Length: 170
Length: 95
Image 1: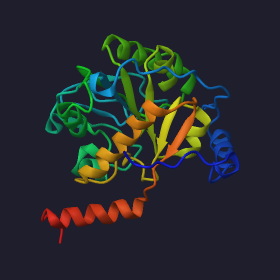
Image 2: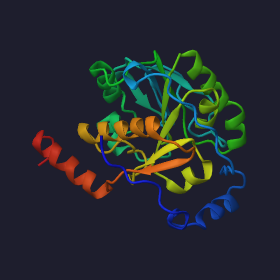
Image 3: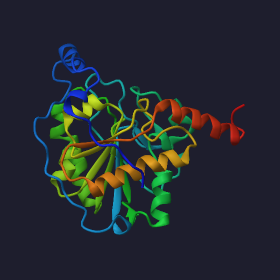
Image 4: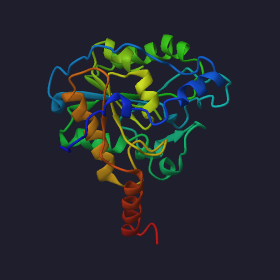
């Protein structure tokens, strides 16, 4: 495993500390700030016996499912299941908020389904949940997102019998 | 969302490309990669880098002791792009 450097001291943290306030001045309530930390849950067995689920805000969805509403003024608060055994050719992206030049050539740069399938096949992971989860990151009402979509997905993550969750906020 | 999952007893880790957002939202565990938005796992066809990001996240999930800890991956976007271009050249996808 690689050598990863740890969190720097707080004063070295944000690159532009004032930026957050300017976003919230323009779009009041659009940015979440939390003061507290959630207690850590622990993996109950080794990774090689654990089932991973993947949650993405990249707007990736199986072809033929209802496209995310990318032009709604406050965003789309629904999610899609993405079968973990899907082929990349069976998936497509509906979103407008991040550059997709990498993803259109190799979806794994934002939705690494092939890499996760390989890690499961090699036994690094015990397996993958039947479905992964996908929604779009453009949601201008984070309070609503927290109350509805976050809870809906968290419930679904439990129902998929996930042992751990990898999340990628695009 | 990650907090909602963790509260249900499922350990979680996220990949961040926006350190300020992550510091404000305080997910239980995150790794920070200094990559362009939409490229959290690196660059096209760079299988090793894509794996490395996932494995670093999994390692953090197993080893983290404190909630809110953010691990920085010692990589740069410029280096990732250079390696990606070399891989595409080797695959004959780019001159």
